[in-house]
Length: 93
Image (cartoon, rainbow, N blue to C red; front, side, top):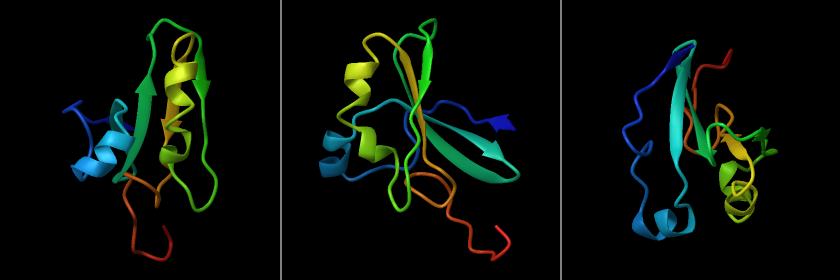
């Protein structure tokens, strides 16, 4: 696993979407694939992980994350193939 530099936000989003999704994001590389995640709240706070279902992404939690992040560190990954994470095209992936 390689943590990618925090250059702000993964792929540039259209302004209208960034307004709806103004969350702090990061990414890690796993087996050559970029997995994007939201990371909000104090680093020292107890962590909570929010997982999305199929076919959604962390955008699903956009209204909940700010509320929960007041007391917890919230991590919400975009599973591979969804949201801002890589979308592999090879069948085995």
